[in-house]
Amino acid sequence: MGDAAIEILMANKITHINIEGLDVELISKPGLKNIYLRVKPPEGLISVSAPSGVSLELIGEFISHNISTINQAREKILSHSPASKPEQEYITGSKVLLWGRPCTLNVKESSGRSYTIKLTDEGIILAVPENSTHEGREAALNELYRSELKRVLPDLIKVCAIRVGVQVNSFSVRNMKTCWGTCHIRKKRIIINLQLAKKPPECLEYVVVHELVHLIEKNHTKRFHELVAKNFPDEKRVKKLLAESHFEI
Ligand SMILES: [Zn+2]
Image 1: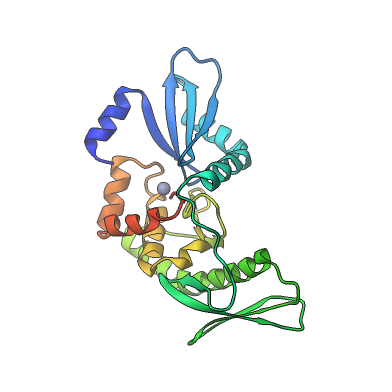
Image 2: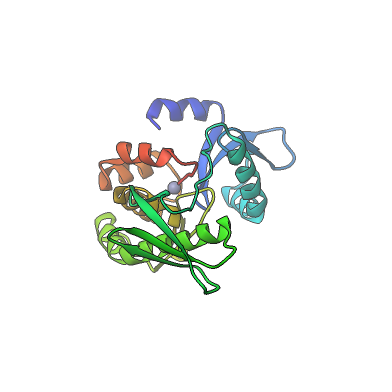
């Protein structure tokens, strides 16, 4: 967001804050008695109206308290948005994305009861039990994504933390529905969405840098964006790649 946009928003008493990795639109109104929360279509923007003078901390607590309701509402909105893609199929010959490239799926029925997945030079081999389900196949693929991220993240976080100049205590990989990454500032912990393994590797690097910069600057302020740009000059191109999916950062 450029300077001009920030000025206009300030004049309308609307600001954006980052809570639990979610971008929250905050509207302060002098006459209000309570805090009101709305999740707006089509992008699932979280909008909070609050009486003037309420602390950001209180609003943060309010959001955290209602986080599961918010996520449910967002999922509902995003799944109905016209831009949502047809469901991915997981059958032999299907193409699934890995690090930005299409990878051929080879599905084999096995006598076992579990799903096993293996990445080979020829593609991904997915062994499924009899009566396998779409959800089971998807979960197996997500485990491949999770293990790919766990393979590359320790070194990537180390390099990026040195570049940004912060210390990170830990990281975890999760399948999240609404955001690419989040940062637990007090615990110095970053959480990365396993769906990033579908995107080109620079997307993961960008999200890591973004979350690490939150350890210096909590909100998406002008200073925050300057720090991200300084530590990740290719931001514009990567943001475009990330915007193809309905996640925030
Ligand atoms: Zn952020």
